[in-house]
Length: 96
Ligand code: FES
Image (cartoon, rainbow, N blue to C red; front, side, top):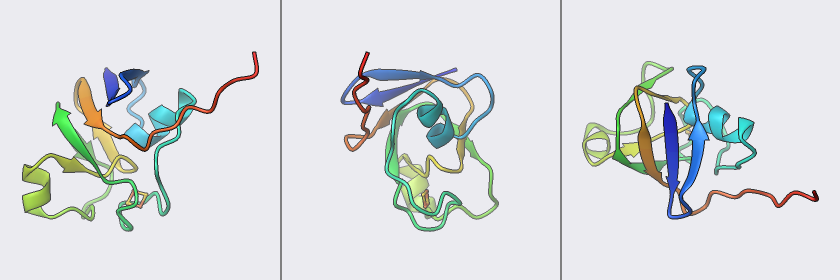
């Protein structure tokens, strides 16, 4: 499965059933985060394509927000390819 991060167009492979946040970090990409347990909403971002399941029973997004595509990447696991809007994503430049 692949997660595409817009507007940069970066693509993260997520073959291990990791959360979106963990998969991005494994690929060297930093997304906004704080609690990492679906509570604080620091990581909230909009999913424009795809679907997710949650690692916690009560992630901190309302039904209306879910319907509008808002997800919490720290506790969301892709069910297929995803496209997310994460303008705050950062990929620290490498020295090599
Ligand atoms: S980091 Fe707190 S809800 Fe995702």
